[in-house]
Length: 553
Ligand code: NAD
Image (cartoon, rainbow, N blue to C red; front, side, top):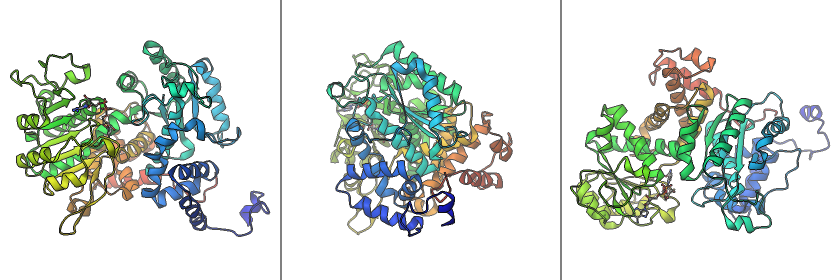
């Protein structure tokens, strides 16, 4: 009651003074009483705006129940319907994030000033922005300003999984137009009614926004999200040396799959150099993942880039990608195109498998069911323990399910998928847990590490360190259960380890600028896992994680 008097709240609230646990019980009761996932999404969205602590306590209390509501798959639906479900936010209250339209480009300083004035504390500075232009939202395509749901949702995962302070997160949606006719025809569409900028106009506009953001908040980390593939690589290349930034679709995905692959190689037990990887699908995701896994052979096994490259085969809709196939290969496929096919072309996946004899088959094709029983059986003939990663999302596009992979490899498979598959109970009644290459294992810890060490840029080797740390984060018990990824309910513990590894690598590369980290890890301190310096570093990271509690805002 003393606190109520201090805050001048006596009489404005019902008399019972409650604990957060009481409130949590009520909140779950209301949440679970909703008719469908969209209603639950709206309930949570409203709660986040009105009671941040209670919202995050809910997320951390029951992550398996809430994550699919605040992020995929429900968030996809929310983005599609954004202009219809947009809440009637009070102009002086909280807001979803920054909308920066092409018409705002001359007024960016004013936008940032308005943002600063909206903060509850004038000293606050954003630590991290997630930035999208809504052009390739999940697998749903161009959703224009509806894409705002993604930075909003993703930053909630940064808070929940890595304890980044929610008041220091900044969702940004660029509105450089939309090519989605449905949006343009919708009278309630909340974005600009114009076609998208392209080419130099697009890149120059992004340059202007980033330069202004950097001037205002020089230490802020920028995470690029859900830009169309044609812009995503170029944007990253253009800005990664200049600003503290990364792209989760490219680098986060690459790192999380690399980590699962490292653990699969440990399980298979044949020398790393004898692995042969066949990618089914040769789009931006496949090429990004393949390049990240290549680093493993180069950095951990001393191979040259060319030697490592030769362990990879890509297969697209026309068959095995070879230099002499006769069609003009898209630029991103040329790097891995084979020249050792002796003029022979392979169209059918089974034929390609007989030719390549892969130890690992990785699906990034969005083609459901392409890893047929026969394909899985052939792989099991070639390998004692075949590695099969059907990574396409959602489940309706996955190349095979966990159950199919278990049945047709007689339980020998080392499996990771993009989507969450149910556990599989074998004939003896033993339950097997599928691996899920969920980006959430990497980006929160990577983001937190970058915020705490503030390297001048995020290098490939920092990304690699995050993947290696994730691979090493499995407990004895998880290894005994042959898991490729840690259990998701340990996510905060895992994020702390990933963040610590990012800090350590940033110091090693002489890029870290944050004095606190440099005092724990002076340049030259190797901080091997388990050493006093490493333990101190992990503790420091954990001490900097925000947790929902009673702290006043
Ligand atoms: P994309 O459209 O750029 O690439 C698809 C590729 O599949 C193309 O190379 C295409 O030629 C090939 N393909 C299509 N039909 C084929 C067929 N019948 N046989 C062989 N190849 C065929 O898409 P993308 O952005 O590279 O994403 C691909 C998939 O990866 C999506 O389903 C996406 O959800 C998934 N993905 C998963 C994760 C993850 O698990 N964390 C991350 C990123 C992307």
